[in-house]
Image 1: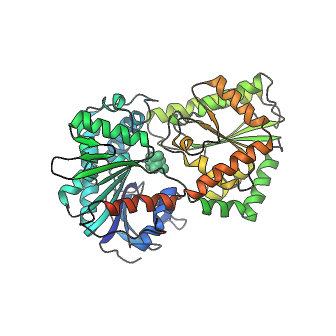
Image 2: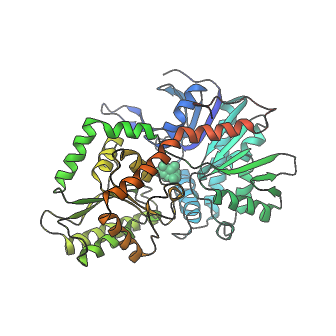
Image 3: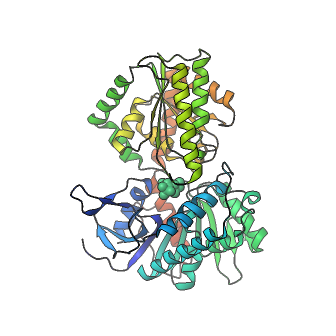
Length: 480
Ligand code: F6P
């Protein structure tokens, strides 16, 4: 492990791309955390000797020195127990998360949570100011750090600053509930470029800035009184499509997919849901829809099974605890009422799996069911499409997932409409293989042509255009 220096590209995210773990010999170590963002940014980080600032997810209050792991410069930020409670579980996931997801749950507004959010954002900004070289590019990620752009600009006006929001940006009517709406908008405006998943999010932001702050705007540009302009535009995020296709083609993954089908009793069709256990994902409604189809005799447990993987998430937040209990009860009731010996209607797994197992599940599943009430993008939908290089399988997709704007050939559903969802599950179940192949081919082309490297390059190329007289430019991976 060597010590990193200062960097020309700095990623600032709530999470580091590694987790702090206790190794089998009892010592502490680091484990790479799999995730789209890391694979997206890794090549550009290596090409620019970038640094990544973030929280390793656990540990004590003592902040270790930055270190280099597997060629990546990592700068850990520790959160105290109080900060985890008030900044991460509180303001980030108890206030902003539900507010930005259409109020699927009720957001809580607490002044101590806000104060802690400000403090933690300031610490991240100060750390970024120390690490960034003169004229460097700093790319801040997501809703946990919306004040960092402005705080950082005050400390280091020489930097180019970008911000990307991975979750939806809500309409003004919802955002305006926030007691600290003005501070958040001003925080974001510290960036030169603000990226959103969809054009609608960018438009919501520009409208709010005009309404609440009174700044002049024209299309995707905001003009600030100090002469600076800020661009707000859509950059839909994607996956490492080539990586998933390669994985899905591996012999071991194919064998595992066959073993999964076998273990499920080789039913005619397997439905699959893979989600973080989050109330935005619509897991409850989709399981109910499937169960009703069985209860009504439109599907039979000998023919069809629903595999639901729910990855544990934010387990100390009350809404998430309630959801877990609700799903546990629902699955128990459905299997108790409708299952037969060796044939549960739902095979439920509350666990997280490595990429290989996910790819095997995608290969084993005939119908992937992705039904969020609101989702910034939903990368699971794109991963499924990438893994179906055989053009088999059908994707049932909520029209409220960002991915629906690109994966237009999916079987679209409104997750609030249980009867509509039931009809669409049946349509996907009964679909002519020629029809599903045509749809899958078109969706795969979309995912392959617009992968995560294209996403990172397009954002960084756009960053290079802002204030061209000023600062160094970051080298893209493929160029555009
Ligand atoms: O979708 C937003 C997001 O923050 C992702 O970036 C992340 O993978 C996911 O939610 C899980 O978040 P957490 O860091 O709270 O586990």
